[in-house]
Amino acid sequence: MVKVEPLADLEGTLDAVRAASRLSRIELRDRVAAYGVAAVPAMADWIGHPEYTRFAIRVLERVGQQESTREAAVEALLNGLEDAESDEMVRDIREALARLGVRRPPSGARVTPDRVAVPGRPGQPRRRYWAMRTSQHRPDFIWREVMDGRLRQGWGWIEEQDLERIKGRRLLGVELTPEERVAWRAHRMLATEPAGVRLGDLIVTQNLPRHGRLSVCRVIGSYAFALPVPPDPEDYGHILPVELVAADIGRWDGQVSEALRHAISLRPRLYEITPYGGDVEALL
Image 1 (tube, helix red, strand yellow):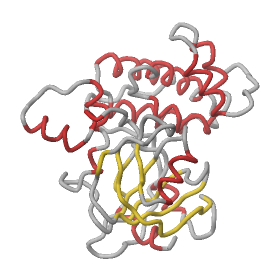
Image 2 (cartoon, rainbow, N blue to C red; image 1 turned 180 degrees about the vertical axis):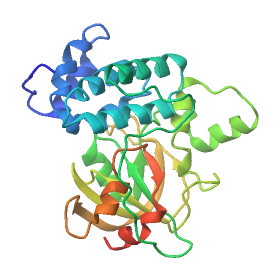
Image 3 (tube, rainbow, N blue to C red; image 1 turned 90 degrees about the horizontal axis):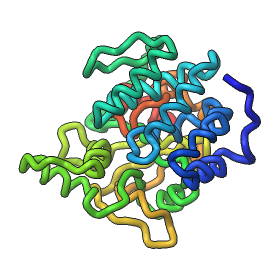
C-alpha cells in the first residue's frame, strides 16, 4: 500500500469524501485508508449505503493489504458480505476478498477470520446482553442523545424506515424498497422480533463517548422511530429508550476482560453477547 500522510483528522477526510462526486471520490481512497484500523468502523458502516458501498469496499481492501490491519479489514468485508442486499454488492466484496487472498466463502455461510475463542462468564438469569456499534460520524450527537435517554442507531433517515412499519410490510409480503432493506438490518432493536432486544437488557456501546471508549446502557422501553430535530443530523431515527449505567470506560482498562474485548470486536451493528454477560456486569 502506498504510504500516504492522512489529512488533519478522519472525520474531516470523510467529509471530503461526502463532498466529492462519484467519479472523483476514489481519489480519496488512500487518504482514508491511511488511518488504518481507525477507518474500518466508518467503512463498515458505509457498506450497504446506496452511495458509498463501492468506495467503502475499496478502502477496506486497501487497509487489508497491510499485515497489521488485515484482520480488521477482512472481518469488516465478511460482515458486509453477510448483510449484502444485492448481487452486485456480493460480487464486489467477493472480488476484494479474493484479491486479499481470502478463500471464497460459500454462499449464505457465516465466515469470519480465524480467532481463538475466549470463554466468557455467565450474566444475570433471564437478562440478555448486546453490543452495538453506532455512528462513527456524529459521536458527540449520539452521546448527547444517550445522556438524554435515547440510544440512536443510523440507517434511518426517512419515516418509511420505521422498523415497525417495515415489519408490517414484510408480513404482508410486500417487496421492500432499498431504503427499507438497509434499515431492516437493525431489526433486532424490535422487542417483537424473536431475537430482539428486551426490557432490562444491557447494551455495550462501542466508541462512545469517543473512539476507543465503551459505555453500558440498560433498555427501559420499546423501540421508537423519530428523526432528530434540525439542525442535528438528518439520520439516526431508530431509538431505544435507555438509562446509562456505566460510562466512558477505556477498552483496555482493567475491568474490561479479554473475553469481552474479543466479544465486541468488529461485527454487525447490533448483536447478542449473552455468553459474556458476567463480563459486562463487571463494568457496572
